[in-house]
Image (cartoon, rainbow, N blue to C red; front, side, top):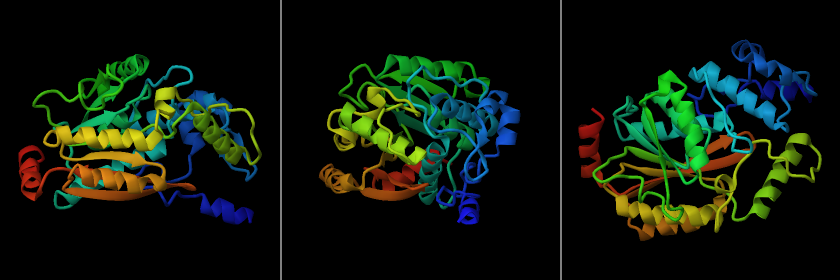
Length: 321
């Protein structure tokens, strides 16, 4: 049983084939890159080096090491209690959406800073723009309703020379808006990405955290200690994921010619039926659902566009060639 566990965990085969994090974490290499990680590394019950994912500081330091080792990020800090996202899952979204773009471009991923991506809810961590820029050289606009998040993300960009001039941060001053006030007149984006708030209330968010921590510790946890952090706007909103995504879909219609394709993560499969209904209602030309698997968690990306075949071809020839 032990051998099976170790063998199974050598490679995370559910992650995208281009994901740098498919193999088990090499803690010796990561500690060499980020020495402060050493204090959190210990042998787990399988006699493998690991960290205690129940400890927020350990999770954050692992992220710092991963970002420094794989993406050459020298400075990465987030304010206390802000979302500390798992890097492999964030990388997966970027790789899968890049693959979608390649399917429109004769199998070739469009790269370079001429490809412009909008990250809705960039957060204090700025992780999607970091990975997208490092992997494909895309330029980014990161939008968020939280001034602290914008300030933190801007500091990350400013203190990493390799990111300067490639990631712009914009504050969404009206919380009920998503694209309004962010996409400027005559501005064009090749894609938009979003990791929406999953939960519909603080109570639901805390219950989800307790479930996750109980799974990590293999015992029932009664107190919500947010190992990955997260502010209210990052983890929950009124109406939860479904309401947020439906609002995004209806607002995207108003910017149908401003973006080649819109996309969002959908964590709850039960929300898909209503989301497809909304996409049909706004008369999208094409909708694609891309499955993603990370560990025991199954998620998916929903992508949509309002551009017909001729408009898509013109966009590609004009912007991607």
